[in-house]
Image (cartoon, rainbow, N blue to C red; front, side, top):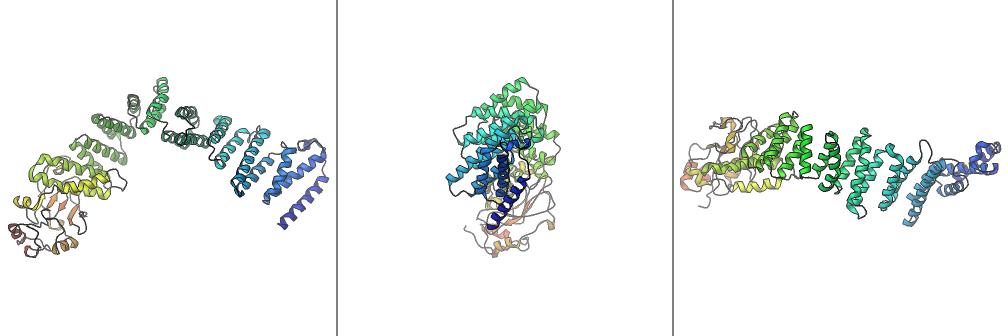
Length: 546
């Protein structure tokens, strides 16, 4: 501190000495005071203000600032630049809320005085000053919501078309927040401000990122209800019915608001005719699906699919077609679309989710043992869906619940036995959706080559030491035909109900039969010479309750 004071004293002496050599009666110094003596002292005070700020001696700086504001506020723009620096530092160092608020008020006063004396500056005039003030107001007085809105309105009014797009977004975002969180802003104000400010972005296409933020704030505000949006856009569209950009904006806003009124459908279909796209088709399909018009939803999705070339977008469309088909009970269409979607992205769990339900839905048409066996395919496919669906998927809980439902429909051991199915036998699902390919319907049994069957040591262990399979369940090899995808099932894990999977290069899924038959006749077959290697013989198997 002593060094600082010494330097300041030295600076004062230097400036005083230099001042003696200057003629302050010259008219160029008139802005610093009425007399040469006043001009000399005020110039010294301006230099002392700079030195005090540079040395972070803000108490001394405040003294010199007051002197300059009282005696020559028009002399230098730097007086206010340093005054802003001074009070921002005092705010940060305040020891109480009252002290902080006092310094915040002083900071706002500095901006007002700067605007009064330098508002006509060609580069840093009123628009610049009020923009900075609004931002500081938001930073230092965040709870004064009305004051924040007013400060930003003044800044935007001063800046006009040259306003910083970030300032427009900051104002409108805070307005929308106030609508959601306070009783100070009504929906009409949000709508009118959106309508007033939206043309600003039309004049600034380079500010597309800020326009996205602007629209998002409006869409999330809650003020953008379907009724309010219709009021906002109806007159505009009637005045310019072929304005593609306006239609795109209206459709996007009303789609995000999940509107389903006649006005929305009219403009959405009109826009789709102008510019077909998978995104618009998805919006329309969802809207028509919500209305229960599945045929129209399918029409738009299939039209979009016909022209879409991007594989990722095609996969999304196929998933949507599969889901709509499932809801509409068009099982064949749903399964076909799900298989295609699965082939485009085998790591997406939703196609498996749809396929599993298609398999289960078609089981009733098969009847008897064939229908029950279809639930093996449904179970395996749904298990794959559970494996792939993310934890936040809206379909995950339904998929998990379906596993138990499918398992309860499996054939029991007696039904397997009386259908002449033994351990090691293979069963082909040829009935219902699981037994069909996309092109040519049911397939005959295709024998598996020896190397296509493999067993897991864990499964063998579970059978040797007492099967974890429930009594009465029959597990047989299942061949589920489907183009381009397949998985192999080697048995049930010891610790849970999931099946083990391994990759194979053929077009079907396989489940090997490990059947804990309960009847003596069945156990006799189970111990036959054709038993597979590594599988326990009948006399080694633990008896299950009869």
